Length: 234
Image 1: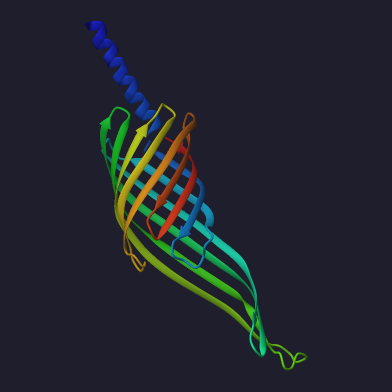
Image 2: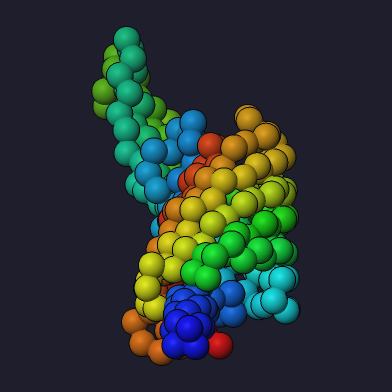
């Protein structure tokens, strides 16, 4: 009987060790970030970097923060044919999205190797676009005439506030691998669809003691993000 109780105690302690080793809420990280807007005239993804941090205040509460900066640029070269004229457009377009987010989470232990996280957060998106170039216009009836040239240099900015709630399930598959799946609600000001269902999927792999590779995908209907970061767990 005593041997059985001892074996059970060791098993429980081992399971707790797995959860503690694989699921960490104390870290700082940095790495690659990708942003893509839905229902946008820009089909390409924005690439950049992300910086993240999380601190466990006690056994139940966690504070976290995220900053990501992504951009996309392209050359614009077009020729438009009219009945009596030709228009040639040359230029360069730059787009940038900066995102920051602050959150606070409440943790609930479900099993020895899993945790449920209830998170509230608020943040902001800063979007900026720059378009520089020239438009050359020539009448076909006078092909030897000088082009009418219009030079343009435009800049536009937008700021969107966001806040929401998330429920995330963290599960430790082993002492080095854990996964995360979450759903939530996100409100985005000035978006076509202000109230959005969101979900999140991710994996974390401990490469050596103290360091973890994290891969995270999030979708909030009007935009989606991807992150691959190297985390230092403390």
